[in-house]
Amino acid sequence: MSHPERPGSGPAGSLTVPPAPQGKSGESLAAFAARHGLTQSSARPPLGQYIRKVWDRRHFIWTFASSKRAAMYTSSKLGQIWQVLTPLLNAGVYFVIFGLLLELHKGIDDYVPWLITGVFVFTFTQRSVTTSAKAVGGHLSLVRALHFPRASLPLAYTAVELQQLLISLVVLVALVLACGVAPAATWLLLVPVILLQLMFNVGLSMIVARLGAFTRDITQLLPFVLRTWLYVSGVIFPVASLANRSETVRDNPWIMNLMEANPGFVYVELARQAMIPSYVAQNDPQVAMANPSLLWMYAGAWALVVFVGGFYWFYRAEERYGRG
Amino acid sequence: MAEIQEQARPVAPPPVVIDYTRQPIVVVDDLHIVYKVYGAAREKSSGATALARVLRRKDRPQTTTVHAVKGVSFVAYKGDAIGVIGTNGSGKSTLLKAIAGLLPPHTGGVYTDGQPSLLGVGAALMKDLTGERNIVLGCLAVGMTPEEVKAKYQSIVQFAGLRKGFIKYPMRTYSSGMGARLRFAIASARTHDVLLIDEALATGDAKFRKRSKAKIEQLRKDAGAVFLVAHQLDVVEETCNRVLWLDDGRLVMDGEPKEVIAAYNEAINK
Image 1: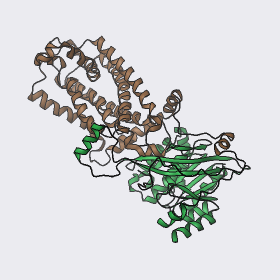
Image 2 (image 1 turned 180 degrees about the vertical axis):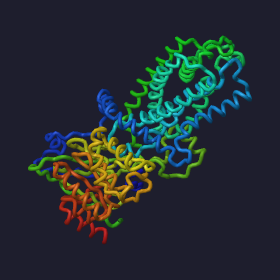
Image 3 (image 1 turned 180 degrees about the horizontal axis):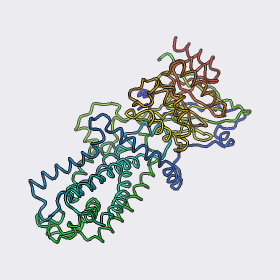
Image 4 (image 1 turned 60 degrees about the horizontal axis):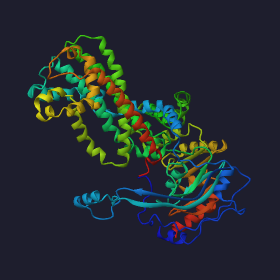
């Protein structure tokens, strides 16, 4: 709090100060202000105007994101290399545990590219959500000092992760090529996949940012939610293989349907189908691919609903951010 | 401090006399600001009591409401440079934030012409980045377009007057005075209708104070108004044409700098 704190200054309800005497003419201050065209600020602008304000701030959002990313690693020796190293190490850990030790890769020919694609794509959503929980709560001094549409903050945080993803994608392409996968025209499908995922992430970041602004506890809870989400999204092992492993899943087909509608799975799966032709060509029931047209439908629907809903929900609390 | 409060409480706030010959730019009408503070300990709490509280869906006991501004009224006119003085915790910063529209009034109102802006660009800067990058970031944060930033960049560097080469160093290597210069330079690069300055000039040296005084003078001439919160009374006296004295969220005096500062000095030295 940068405000003076005076616990002893009386309860909120006791507004017993006598009203200040007004000017001699008897005109109230409010009327005097209105006559000179002065207006009260601190109200929430209408939605259309708000969207225009966010658009006007696009340069700030992007620069804020780049600056944040540049500042993130200034104190470490390897510096910006960590941006590439972190997702790689993550994929390495999963490869050793789930691929080598638990042998969950059965039936997938190109397990390494399959795994890395999944990890990189899912990390985009995961990190957008984790960091956005603090987008407003972590910048209270900024929110309390300057006027700008607050949606700029979660947007900037998603932009940081987008920039990070673009770097990761270069590494991904290099690795996939190194693993012997030939470049294919379907790689271009990655562009719409990432765009839809970006929309979804922005919406989700807005939701999490509003939650995090008023309930700080969310930052403690999120890692568990996201880890669970990682496991059920088929990032590490194919979702289809669950039907053979678990009787509960086999007896209740709706669990499978639900898992295939899960946005985490949808974007990861679409990215894989785009990147790895051999994965599309295989017909092992253990790895059975989800129906692409259904996936695209899910991808579009999730992106649209979460983006619009999340933005609107965040906007609804615009004037309350930074007050708590 | 206790003496001031005892002396100030019974005194009714000074009457607001409207000067009809001048153009008002900020009107504050019987303003009350109340806000919640988290983390203020009131009772001993353990995990068990916290859990019980969550289950009962009660507000956290650490939340305290603070009544920071209690019925302040005044009118500021175009061309005013108003100093706000008072002891720590008298509600000066809160009043400024309310004028800026960043804290909504509990009751009463703040009416302004245009959007007052707080000289608070410091919150947008990142200490691990160079001065150069921070100028761009800060300018965009206060709402400039990239073209404006390009146009103003040189004059900002010049006004900040950092020692040679420092503009290429991370801001964490700056002294507090250098940081303050850069922040003031960025914030004052834009034209403001109403500029609110909170303690920003405290750490500058004599040369910088002289420059910032000239800048404030220029802002006043551009028919805006400037509010200045400061503890160095000499700074207030030499830059302002009017002073508000706040105590415990109430307006004690509103008038000529010399008069108000003399009365304030008398009260604190009692």
